[in-house]
Amino acid sequence: ACERKITMPPKPKYTKEEIINAALDMVREKGADSLTARDLGSKLNTSARPIFTAFENMEDLKNAVTDAGVKMFKEYSKNFTDYTPAFKQMGMQIISFATKEPKLFEFLFMHKNPEAVQGLKTVEDTCVDVISKDYGLGIEQARMLFEQVWIFTFGLATLSAMKVYEYTEEQEKRFNQESENFKSKWKKYIDYDPYYNVNFTRKTCNYDINID
Image (cartoon, rainbow, N blue to C red):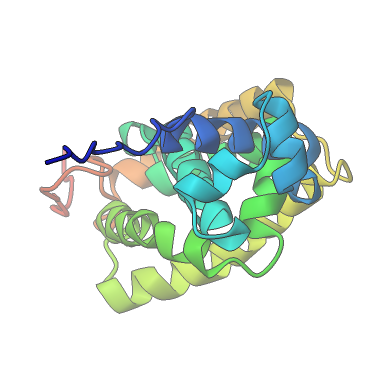
């Protein structure tokens, strides 16, 4: 009897992760329009076949690139809760990200992209939580404030990505200095304000009136 040889499928030339990283680099460098199967294959020094072995189609690949881009954005802004006030810092980091990664910001947030919006859901919930803690607001009030400021922030970030508005480190330093000047000038009133929380972004809040 003849033995049947079992032929194993060829090992993929590139892993999914390698293809996603190459596609993400293309988007960061030249924008979403540069991401074609042919150009991605050229970047990988191969044909388009390995791409469609790893992904069903280009839409599937773009969704994976979106996930990678959102992950990169979250990594960039992950420490915003360490600052005071945290939500202001988040806004500044969004604008900074748009300035440094304009093509990726455009790909993620400047056109209809449900995957990116869904990916930001955890960021939204964290922002609402810190607003509630920082300013002593109920969740619904905090969410309302978040939505209003979020739109304004993304507007500035979009202008930054389009090079219409330039956000620099000098401006960031000035904003921080203005905040410190405000606190210094109005310290007497802040210290005696029963609604001012000195423990910004901490879990416990103390609204006792200072009568010293």
